[in-house]
Image 1 (cartoon, one colour):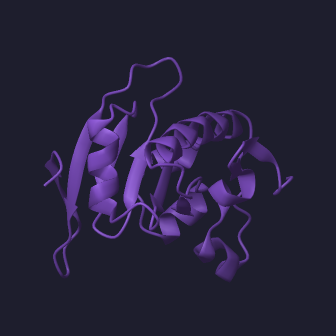
Image 2 (tube, one colour):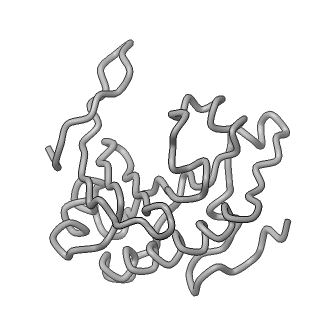
Image 3 (cartoon, helix red, strand yellow):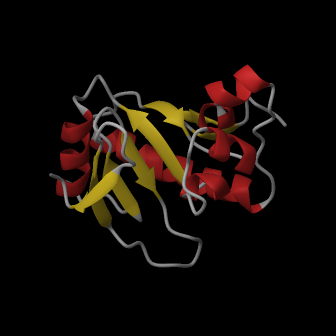
Length: 154
């Protein structure tokens, strides 16, 4: 895989496939076929996000996850990360994750799912050919419990 592949003007494939969990365990986290196509679409959406955040760089902490990597990090079995349709990120130059979410909602950025996760933002794009749901959720984390999700930006 060409890790330095430029998907869009500001996003490389390596940014959308990086995984500390995979690196620590020597797991190859490489997209193929439609997963790579989805990552290109995701990068295009992230360009719109970056523009809405006044051009500030987006720091991606998780993008594509192979099934093995997704299991290790405790991701949902139906996670959009599995097929390259989701990224978790922050944008410190713009503001807090909550401020980022509010900006994207206010400016009408098109997405399938936007989740305020407390210390990061999760953004997903729809399955190719499907309409975006524009679903906004807030994750609530309580000690010893799985995250629960409330509708809207809470």
